[in-house]
Length: 455
Image (spheres, rainbow, N blue to C red):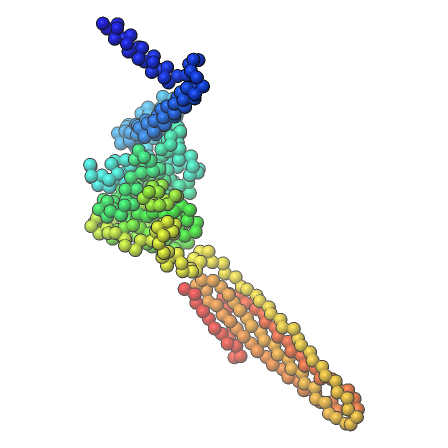
């Protein structure tokens, strides 16, 4: 009985395969049908495997690797912590490096820090414990986009500092920049995009985070969540500045950040001398309408002796948030005044120079001839007028001066002749010149001086 059932199943399977696989006896149309079906089936299996690998297999491997690193960082005694295919070599640790980094540094000398960022406690954590990771840094901002901590190819990449930041012992970074991917698996900085919804109760979970370098332990207070457009990075606002001309320039930059923040973090101030941390990831187009959108969280380092506590109830929705220009275009909304009014270039880009301008009006000469048979008197009058104008032009924040000097000389000559030809000539010349340094001031009784200060 069992053998009969096995034969029945085998025959059914054979019949099914004959319906799928072309055989020599099939007519041409049947060959085409079966080949088309087989191709579609292969594509389906391939797509299914790709999705499975992308959304489950690779994330599981990435998460397992990060779990290993967490174990090293929090509990390891710095023993044999390299991968089996890595050679154990003697490593010279940087002077002053914190001991918990030894196992990580032994495996990858480009380790530069560790971040732990939660948005709520325990199961209430909006980020679900996803942001508890090592941070690396190399000579560019490209390598760790698709390489893991050990240098293996991984589309999840690794969290990394901007290559322009200085992570040496005692270095000061006014804007420390940190990059991480947005992934369907929810790893790295993917959870940042939960804050784009405008739900203030989510933003109120953002209080502080810890970011430790190789040499010190730090706490930061969040004060902004922005949506930016990478295509506008060089034209409207850049979140990637690392240098500032002075404290006014730095505070102006902080205000630009606050203007673009989706929320007001009323319990966190930023003052002169502070250091900030900027964390970026890609945003979802369905949430922001932007093809090259970026979700950015900015925090301020807790000052020495400052209470790190933050009152979440002082975090409110920013009703006047300034979004990227393309966001208004995509939404078919009028551009705000910030994008339509003309602005003066910032002082750091000002070039002060003395401008010399010379204008010359050609002298005009008119002559008339008169013949007389009687005695006559001819009066010849020559008038010369010279106007000298000194102009100093500077840019923002510099005084502009205009000096005008006018001199007129008149000479009259009388000649008496008999039966002769007399010629009368009038010559006028006007010249304007300027060659005065920007900071020089000249005072004279005959001068008129006007000054303008551009804010």
